[in-house]
Length: 150
Image (cartoon, helix red, strand yellow):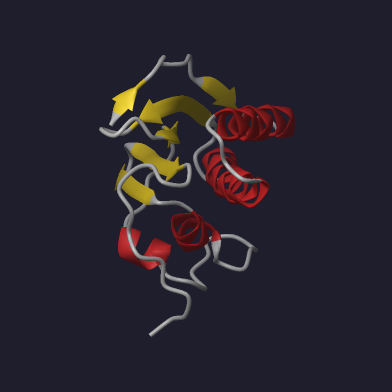
């Protein structure tokens, strides 16, 4: 995967910042040739992850990059990071129903299911970084999507 033109990270500390990040993600997805459905999936994922950075991480930043695979296919990669308390148990945090607040506990796991690639790094006291990538149709490495839970 090659990053076409690295972007400057966008701060996420307020609801206005979240709106800017969502719009920038939608624009990048549209420019990469995503369908409206896939634009919405990407925006939903980054919205949840950026909100987590604000609510649980005390604010952070989002980097949005257009990427190209070896075959020339277009995608969008987003890296969301904060310097908050970190996540002590990532497996538990990714499980549906786990929440540290008043939500439904679908955020991290739901974001993971919406995109093609998902990685998370977190250490207690060191913050959290989540990287997601979504590819336009016909591009990028594909993982099979599960339509139902085992």
